[in-house]
Amino acid sequence: MNMRNLFLVSATALLFGACTAQKPILESNPAFDPIRKTTLNERYEKALSDVESLPSSGEKFAVVGFNYAEWAFDGRTFDTKKNQEAIDAFNAGVKIDSLFPMNYVGLGRMALRNKDVASAQRYFAKAQSIVENKKYKVSKPLKQNTYIAIAAAQLAEETRDTTAARKALNLASAIDENNLELRLTWGDYQFRKNINNQSAAIAEYNKCLNIDSKYAPALYRKARLYKAAKNYEESLKTLNEAIALDPTFAPAYREKAEMSKELSRFEEAISAYEKYLELNNSCRVQQRYASFFYLTKNYDRAITEINAAIACNENNHILNRILGYSHFELKAYDQAKSFMDKFFAKEDPRNFDVKDFETYADIMIGLGQDSIAILNYEKALSLFPDYTAGYDKIATLYTNKAMAAKGKENEAKRIMYYTKAADTYSKKMAKLGEDPRDLFVQGQVLYFSQQYVLADSTFMKATKRYPESWFWVAKCENKLDVNQEGRAKAFYEKAIVLVGQNPEAIAKGKKSLAEAYQYLGLYYGNKGDLNCSKSAWMKVLELDPTNKLANQLLVTPETLDKELMAALGDCVLVTFPEVKKEEEEK
Image 1 (cartoon, rainbow, N blue to C red):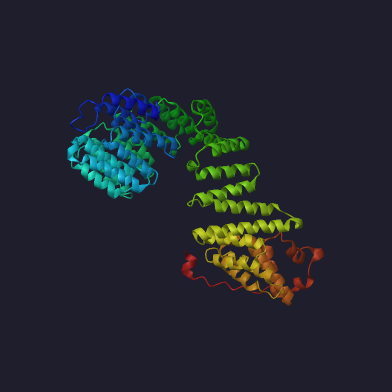
Image 2: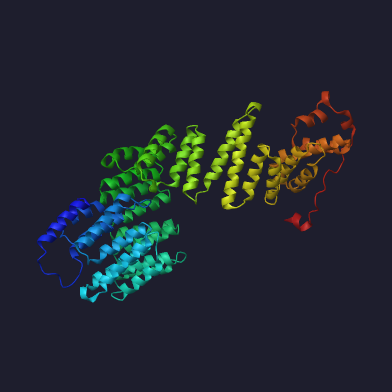
């Protein structure tokens, strides 16, 4: 039954009962307790069905509203329609019975969800004023539950207020400190308050078990606490304990499926989710079950199950997302694009995730449409401030496009792409600060974009962390040395000194070292110093026996340089710093 029909039925019933005497005490109807338990077990559809037959009242709308409020969140995104259903239910409850406090608590919680803290505070204050007004004769259980619900709302939403939650919990504790939901909410408070020390939260959850040894929600909360600490094995162990205590407590199976998935125990994960589906057999759970195969990396099965489940609710556009992701993983890029296009066209933009844009960009790369990929990475960067991986992805795409633009006829295009790659690194470092690796890579794309002065200064900043940057500084200086004055010599020598005495660095940097010695060979040759020139060319051959110019000068009989061959070649080209004995022993 939708909210409008539910309101009409309730209003009619109250009209005929208007002449009856008002209850002397404002209290909860225990008939709604099984419905609340059904909501706790995430059987939201059943809760709505069961509540229809119960008496019309403000409490009835509160129960419906909280059911929708819990139903609206799927663990990742909020369903805006169900959020509105919750708000409509709470407002209808206020209209039917302006004194039932839980509808005001519900409206406060939804206001927090919508980031309207001021309205939330007014609603909570209204609920509190009702239960604390003696003329309304509010029962102690309803009064306590109102305080607990206020605290739970302050802790559950992103705009949480632990101080306000504590005040509400203290008021609830003054009524009955051994209430199970109270102790559970105290545990939630400790979890939010002391995020780096969860001993107090565990102690509160354990108090629940001391009151009722079969209270599965307490073990479920402990398991989620362990999950937050990435202690997945302990979380899984605790969930199994919860299931052993109450095999009908559905959330434990869903959470067990998640934990097993994190531990790559995919068969166990699927088995746990099948049990969750068995307990909560509804279209919603069938579709989540189908989607779960994607999370377990069984992409073919995910596609099959989603196609089978999609008919029961074609308005669940999240399934298009999962189909897009699954086809992407299978490298079926055309199908992946088609489903992602449907998702973007039909889903509420507030539910878009950074992965949606990143995946779409990756799909475009698979289809050879790098420019569209770059636009989507840029969109992800603009919409999600914490997302930074896109900078490197964009820079890499521009670099690849530059490398693909070969030949003199594509020089302008090549320079443009390298420049765009360099600009992307500038944007990244403007946001995140300068990083030696980024500077080193940026220096290279600046060099290839022929911005030698800027490349030179960029490499200089990276030299402390990356000594091989000195080779690039020297290359830049050589490009800038239009009068061939030997500007690069000192920098090549510095690079040789820093890199050329470490065996590991030598093995890794042979090409750069050979290039440095080649420069010295040419430099000394131009100066007429054949002894040092030969020494340099001999080092080139030592590092790179296939070096074409070195072979022409010193190896190939037809092209030998006789004067160079006659030189002794015993010149000391660079002087390495003396290594102390204790350093050698290290």
